[in-house]
Amino acid sequence: MQSGGSYYCFIVVYLIKTDRVIIMIKINNLSVTYHDDIALHNINATIENGDLVAVVGPNGAGKSTLLKSIMQQLSITSGSIDLGGLDLKNIAYLPQSSLIDRTFPITVTEFVAAGAWQRTSFWQVFSRHEQALLKQALAKVDLENMAQRQIGQLSGGQFQRMLFARMLLQDADILLLDEPFGAIDAQTTSLLMTVINECQQRGKTIIAVVHDLALVQRYFPSTLLVATDLVAVGKTENVLTQQHLLQAGYQHFAHCAVHNSFNNPSLEIKNKSNLKTANSASANNESVIS
Amino acid sequence: MITQLYELFIAPFAEFAFMQRALWGVIVLSISATPVGVFLTLRRMSLTGDAMAHAILPGAAIGFLVSGLSVTAMTIGGIVAGCVVALLAGMVARHSNAEEDSSLAAFYLLSLAVGVLIISSNGSNVDLLHVLFGSTLALNDDALVLLTIIATVSTLALAILYRPLVMECVDPHFFKTVSKLSAIAHYGFLLLVVLNLVAGFHALGTLMAVGLMILPAAIARFWSNRLGGMLCIAFFSAVISGYCGLFLSYHASLATSPAIVLVLGMLYIISLIFGRQGGLVFKNNS
Image 1: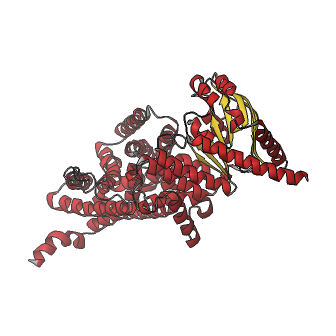
Image 2: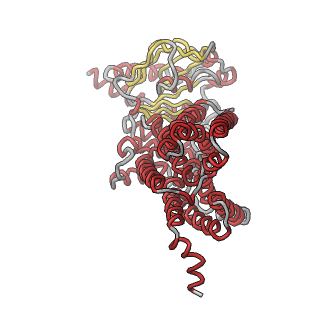
Image 3: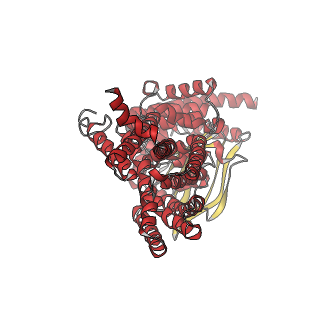
């Protein structure tokens, strides 16, 4: 943590900001039970429009269950999820494991084109505009030179990038990503993180299940910490505290949290930039007051 | 020389109306059944196709019991029975994983037993042979018209279903989140399988009809890794085998539908060895 003063300003800005945010997803007393196992218990959270939220928790904490409940892919035991009038078609969902048939003879371009389904449906010709969007999506994930490859020829990282390209073409308002960085290298992770950041800048709301706490600290402004029950939700630095992590059952990481670094040197840069934003924010703040 | 070649290859089809009908039947079936077969094998549902082929038998047998060797009655019976098993098989495929193949095997053994029982207790062995193995050379006008109508409907329906079906094959999870057509694509496709098997059984018999569906698709997989390419290769291998099968059957007095399926089988073995996509010879290179 930085000095108390800047930290305090940060909270003030946050409160002012919440005045005009639009709430995108409101989770009310959500509980999900599989047979007799409680997967989620009394979760309450609101996710704002344009937020980038990491869902964090130990194995079996109900992270995937939370995303699936938002997607209405399982029956909620009690409580509700309010999507603010949005329909499921406004959500792009990248599940943790999918039934994709990687041996099916289809090219990367054709696969990604499926993202435009809601605009082209099963009969419309792919317009020039759509083709341009498709090329753009492939370029963003650095797959242009793979466009004509068969999907079965892609490596794990390339495949994940292709899934991201399809999601970009979907152009949904909310992105739900279930462990998008599961089995991919650091370089691909940073490329995909850039893509996610761009999406956020374009006003998308993004919720991602992430295991790597260093990554969460570095890139995700908000965090939802869950361990069947909701442990904490809000600004990442307020959520990933030693107390909260211990409460969620992270013995090892909680110890690291004291030093607030998770052995990641890049984190210091993040703190500096926090300081900057906090400073500039306090300047803004003053101007608001005056 | 040319006259000899003509005598050998063309004359049987030019001179005999039954050969022309048989060839027409096989070509029409190739147009509609092979693309369905390609999708079946791509979805790893070859066994489902087989189960449905067997399921058609009791339906056709009941149609036969009710109104004799009537093409329409047997067709309707076959479609109804096929749809019942298609629904059961479809539900099994969508909702369970572990025991899919054993429940399909159970379905078709049961259907086959019921069918054979009905026919053998009420008809003659000739009838049984006719339904099981078809009589390509005895295709009459009614059967041909019906076959052509079914093939046309099936081909058009497949063209409309094409995109949803590809989506459903490649990533069913994703397709379900973006569209409500997922179930329609799945069950519509199974209905097409049934239609083509019913059309096929008039020409080739219930047991051999599935051969004209699955084998060309299996052959095509060895030669192309593009869906379009596979559809073309499957169609041409079916037509060529149809012609060769009729040719063999005419000159060597062999039963027609097994002859066609045997030619397909030989093409399959050749593809298995020499195919460019994963054939035994090229396997080390690719």
